[in-house]
Amino acid sequence: MRTLDQIAVEGGTRLQGEVRVHGAKNAALPILAASLLADGVCVIEDVPDLQDIRVMVDILKALGAAVEYNPPVVKVDARRVSQTEVPERLMRQMRSSIFLMGPLLARHGRARVSRPGGCTIGSRPIDLHLKGLMALGASVEERHGFIDCRADRLRGGAVYLDTPSVGATENLMMAAVLAEGTTVIGNAAREPEIADLADFLNRIGGHVEGAGEDTVVIHGVKGLAGGRHRIIPDRIVAGTLAIAAAMAGGDVVLRHVRPRHLGAVLTKLREAGVEIEVGRDIMRVRSDGRLRAVEQVRTAPYPGFPTDLQAPFMALLCVAEGMSIVTETVFEERFKHVGELRRMGANIRVDLRTAFIQGVPGLTGAVVQASDLRAGAALVLAGLVAKGTTIVEHAYHIDRGYERFDEVLSSLGARVRRLRQP
Image 1 (cartoon, helix red, strand yellow):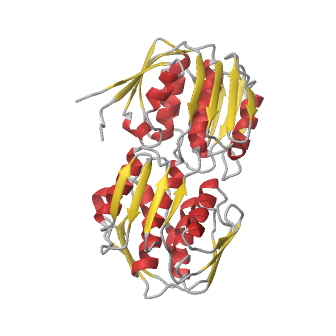
Image 2 (cartoon, rainbow, N blue to C red):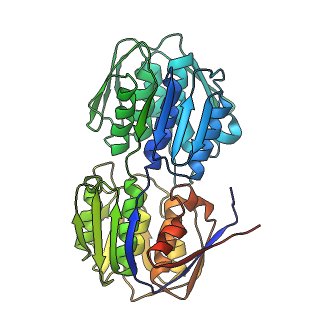
Image 3 (tube, rainbow, N blue to C red):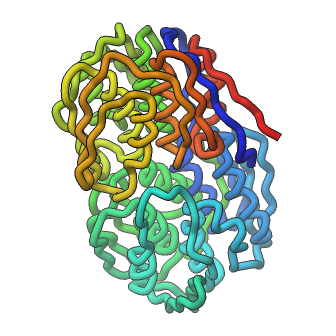
């Protein structure tokens, strides 16, 4: 990981052209974890070439799986997995590694992990994961920062999630697919990535019903085979590029997208004055760069406005005429980009979890720092409309979720380049 790389943006260029959106990171990661359940070779297609994906591949190899990674295809053969402890150094690099508890426990009867790392965007407790696994018969012991789960045989049961956690829903689905009997997950998360995981599990012999709704039913099976699966398009990348086109003005066509996964975002973009046309797997975004304030944006679990697009959309609102209000309900520390946007001339006031954004005529380039993945993308987008040069430090955060983000924007006419550091 090149932790010192920077992204330089020269503002003032319109965006125009076409780009294909890559597969969804947040679908690929749990599906790669689920490949540990299979008694056969799994071929996963359209996997994005991202730092988080490479960490997951390294984890699978460390556990004993045979993995071939030739982007955008990953081939996993987990039949000789013998390890059930995830190396701490890898666990700390990526929160999504918590997904490995369910598959390891279901297939091998034990999983030992350290508390995961990832973006510093607030508290993301894993108690829902642990309570759910215990409801399926697992014993859980926490000591010295490690979590040790054991179960001779998982048994289906009823699990109700206090909040519709994406990670907990997916972890429990993977654990329950090989459990004895039927598991019912109530108040389940409804994100498209959950439905994609269920499609993969069913493709290799699982029996999952209701994924994408608030109740998911998993009928345990005795074993899973290998299979081939294609990852869904990344709705967060598609949304980010749509916001970029809206801010910079121009005419951009996004291919390999599912517009229905972006309903709340497209509604708010239209409120801001952006023209959007959608087809089955294509979306066209047109804007003259003159944007209107949006009265209220409130993040919420799917199908609400995604927290992962709150920072990029706030960058847009910084240059929209009028006062906008953004309320973050998912993560309590997801306003770290506000201070950096202010360095560029944004007028933002924060009161607890609500930000009040008074649009300004223009932003000014500055040296800013990406504190997390989505904040970094937001700062690059702000640089697209800023006068002068913007330098975004800690570009490795952006690399965790956007494949060659600088090159994609450059292909649309933006003046963006990577400053590689030794």
